[in-house]
Image (cartoon, rainbow, N blue to C red; front, side, top):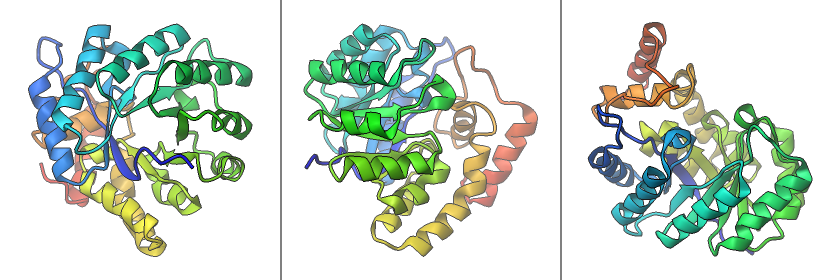
Length: 296
């Protein structure tokens, strides 16, 4: 049986920026140290939350390299290496492997999309080209395409394809996936608000945006779930719900960067086409932070 890359709450870490638009590696290092100090179970670098679509190849590979060095084996480092171009996804995955990433996270091909047969061929081609665990990332709201449970069942047969970050919001799909794929294929929630429910079905945890500002709380939420303390986990999920909703009242990662800037963890600078948060939503976010006890 394949071993999960991690169980618990992984953080989909943001990419902090300098005023000139470059990556702020000093802030990234401080964020990583803060995450590890607050019990995060894995670091995901260069995902959507990390503004990967706007990173140059050099920045993308350097962020992964820097994170691997900074983490120094304390928790798994999962590198976002997905693309809608299979050849490019292979290249980026091989670079991440060479730079020491523990696992790879690959989004379903976007814009040009793919049939289910194409999805199988795409992920298989990448998995064949590397010797690292590969996690599929299913987020149809961003990509316009969704994997089926039958597709996961085929992919699960590959020794390097170990699970999926499921952000479809379809619990029917998650249930069918767990039934078809068995214990060797892990399912992680890709939506913070679904964490307790996915874990209750047999999920291995969450790849979290909220963990950027409440890492210990997200770790504790999954810890309760995995200990079969479901009622306590449900109460914690409900307590965090207003904050989680506020973190997605505008396109991710706009709100979470705004929240982290308020906490003094980084600037709120983003790369276009993302831009600063509206004043109305900023007030909503700050009110939710205050109510949840997240200090400024």
